[in-house]
Amino acid sequence: MELPASNHVCPASPNCGLLIPYSEDRRRSCRRGEDHGAAASGGALAPHPHPPRLLSPAARGSESPQYVTVHAESDFEVRHYRDTVWMSAPSDDISFHVATKLGFHRLFQYLMGANLNSSRIRMTTPILTSIVPGAGPLHSSAYFVGLYLPVEFQASPPVPLPELNLHPDRWPGHCVAVRSFSGYARDHNVVEEAEKLAVSLSRTPWGNSTNHPRKNAYSIAQYNSPFRIVGRVNEVWFDVECRSAGVETY
Image 1: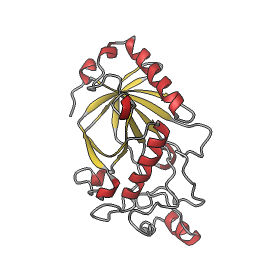
Image 2: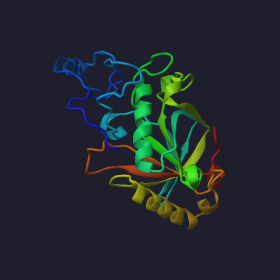
Image 3: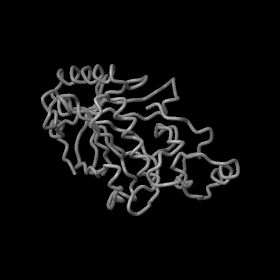
């Protein structure tokens, strides 16, 4: 997602989770732990001039959905995620990169208060783009760009403004096979990474346990700013049946 960068970003803290431009005085206060709230966006649906950088949880302490690793191999692992709620942006674009970029901009407006409560919501990671090959226009892929909602909004997510075409996506407890890869996630390599994970799974009991109505569906998780070149972290996710590892979902 090639989004414009902000020169000054508030360090991560419980009240400074929206990575938005800060003046020098506000950045000093933020480092002291004072809550100044989010900067005014100048209109609920106006594109924000400084969208947040996508940072890894380890780098900024961003909130992410919690999981337990239930199986590990040299080139993939299987995680169990508990019940979670995400906000989802469906897209008719025929490009993974464009769908992710535009879907993220709609989600960011929601975070900045484009919801019926005018609530400001902290940025979380990862940005997750789910891909269903053949389900889009003219048999192209369908894309759904998702953002995990912070714990305080899990029980009652603010309702997005209808113009954004967003909807809450409630995930029951489930297992996910995960393969990590570096570099930038683009149309040409996300398919390759998904195929590599499929091959790895085929050599294990997980190979016949993909848990999706369309067996070739997968998701791409992105954790880093587009301006970070070295040490980028991305993941490809396949939903799998937890019972293959004797894991109870909840």
